[in-house]
Length: 93
Length: 386
Image 1 (tube, rainbow over the protein chains, first blue to last red):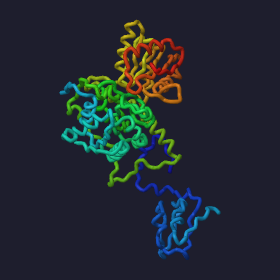
Image 2 (spheres, rainbow over the protein chains, first blue to last red):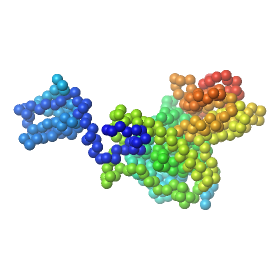
Image 3 (cartoon, helix red, strand yellow):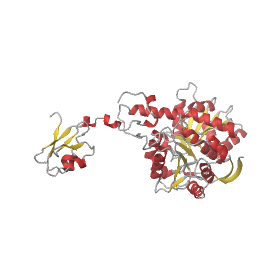
């Protein structure tokens, strides 16, 4: 976000541009990242359904990945994945 | 043509709201506000005002509905007091931050515990920093006039803030008084249809009340602070316009016999008229006393208060709510702070009176003024507490 002065703020802190939240990369908050082991993945899509950020998507082969621009590393996908195909790995480790 | 009629003040408040072309009213009844809730619902049921009256299950919901309705561009109204106002508490700063011009009548009543349904200011004081404009009334005519002016103030493009009209419970809400009501056509001319700055609508998506990180949060707080501070100019401008059209004058701080006063009582709300009686008794005894009545509680009218009390040696600030843990009640601490930078500041003392609907008499003000005149420095006392 560009730096704005207090008098330049829209009354009521209104955001006039729809979908502008996409510009905010919540992935910067992440300390753990999900890594999929596709040999264990059964393509059930539980990770896709449970991701609170909506950042998990399915590729052409039916496997899943997270968009790391928005993945906060919460680990819900790994917790919910019942075949145990997702491991949370420390960032920078 | 305006007409003069006798009516209970709570009903008059509802009548005034009924003249404001309100789109949405969400009101949960609570003593002593109930007569406002009931009479407004009568006006809606009788087709006297074209208002969607939402019968909510709590005050939390009534304020939530008002915020949502206001965000879509509707003129929204609610009324409450005491525990109901406390239940709304978490929503009040949202209404002001989202710049929702809601109007709310508050029939000022104590908060629990102990349970007390009568009158004091301990419900509004915890809402002091919610960012709302707060205006106090001392009689029925003021309730009518200030309610009719409330939406003009709230919706002004230089304000865009919610407004509380403080109507002391029972002492004011349940009093039958003669009041002048302007004609509906005059009100319509004074209060045009609401033109919102922005509205929630699928054709033009926008976000209200969004998330903010420290890179912009302090700027938003400064903007909110300045919005309320700067609203005073517009409030005075609209009160001036009211005087020109309807002949009745309103000021941020009203005065009574303050000329040459050595001691000035600083009051707020319905006890101000009794304070005038006390001042007459004091003047009869040869004591130069006057009253400065705070009408505009927020934004706090520092300049007007200083002008109204100029030359007084002693100010006796009268509070109807305690602020536990500090030697001073809410009005007192603000008044005292306002005078800190003055070279010749008066002695400022604090008296707690009328708590929980305790009767306040002219004699009480005589006693307070006489004691205040002997004070050498700030004092914080409860009148008549054993």
